Image (cartoon, rainbow, N blue to C red; front, top):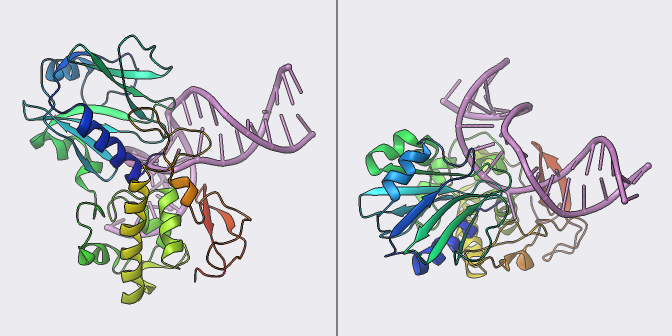
Length: 277
DNA sequence: CGATCTACCTGATGGC
DNA sequence: TGCCATCAGGTAGATC
């Protein structure tokens, strides 16, 4: 569920709460959440180490340790990172728990178990996580790099939505924000990459940065299922500013036309049939 | 190589 | 009320 704005919101919460903390215990009761390394390796490489910072690339979160290793977390569809005092009951589907300073627990909760947690050195990272190694342009890390964005899309014949959600081209957009971005840029989801003018690419680039900034400002989007919450368990507010996502049949905020919904590659796409061309 | 499908899971929701 | 189908924000791996 979480896309770039939600992951970035959690990163900023972590920056405030866990940097400088020592990991005093590691538990991993989940069956498939710890991947790429064994649970034993995770425990050995984290225990006694201090968290020195926070990083994000695309939808990946990383916590560097004083050993040089990185704790890598991907929330996928239903993962949550939550901070709590140890005497607060753990939610169902708590798969990994890091105890910090013997005083707090950083909990990875994930009903659908698509998410993952692992540890890697900087050298191992690309080998261990090809998905992380092949990430494309990150709109938050390099917001002004139009060439990196345009270069990634240049010559692609696929439909715009497929390009925007391809993490190897643009890192961090998913189903919600790709629809919001396409609407802001007044482009249909099925325009092909190689048919976009430079002016349209400029519009897209600006829209991506602007929408993601606004969504982070609002602490991300939480839908009715409340699957995305921040580190403190609080929902975001950007869903109130959505222009198309989950607004089928309601008037476009720009031209009043009813927002359309269609099934595209097994997933919903929302768009305005009038002002997206 | 690029484009497209499916599998991986649990839980919420809506129709009958 | 219960049963069943459908849907949910992501990605890796298989297949064409």
